[in-house]
Image 1 (cartoon, helix red, strand yellow):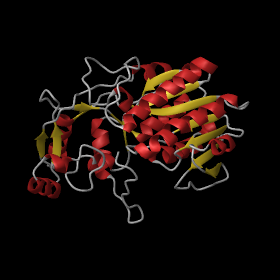
Image 2 (cartoon, rainbow, N blue to C red):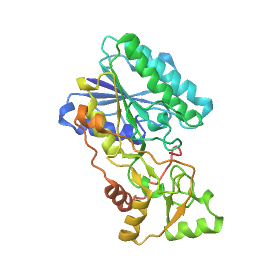
Image 3 (spheres, rainbow, N blue to C red):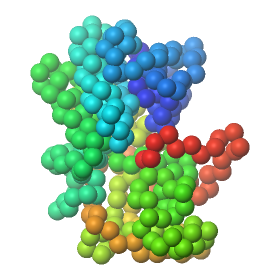
Length: 326
């Protein structure tokens, strides 16, 4: 088993490679890390290949002898790169994969941006049958195109592909900083822009957290997944016959409720909160299909997500670096 991992140096790539190498079920598996700007560390079971997936020759060479692909590489809101890297890059991967005599399974990590995230109102739980509805911007559009392209390669060529659709992925102290009113905020919304400047400075200094309200004025519910739970889902998908040509929502059992976050942080850490009105809509991704077909369960609930983020201590050798906004 030789697994090509794109985006190998990202938060999911690094955790996936480490998890697979430690898993006795995959003791004979080897990894080929396809890297672009940052390089993974080569070992006796990991070889490193450098180049861009936008280059067909690079992709062809990287896929030589590969049995599985775990495709993580993507772009955020970078219109100048997104068609070449995210869209054309996936096309070259799928084209070369379908021609390969060693290819067995292609796993794509998708995103809930493809179904509108919290930008659109949903009348019920978001299942895998929900229609695609990208919100404005190039990133969400690319998530739709990725899912459709993988699906069509399955229809056209019988390619054994699987898409794991994940919401916002958390690790280490990410969730703590996703609630910061300071310049160190991780992802969005950028809370300091939603309140007066003086208030933002005061909230940041006191550790006040935002209690986000939806378009109806109720506490907003938003989907998350911890990187460890996503990695366990990927491992459950590898060579699983029930995953063939399937799409799965991979998320926490319940969405994060900002009112519950505020109440828990007040009770456990004496942190105040402030209401933040928004035009966004609550949503609830349904992970029942992954539970049923993959026999997968997320470990992280709301309290575990909060506690792990607030308890995480970074060493001086591990500065908080945000490679992209979300």
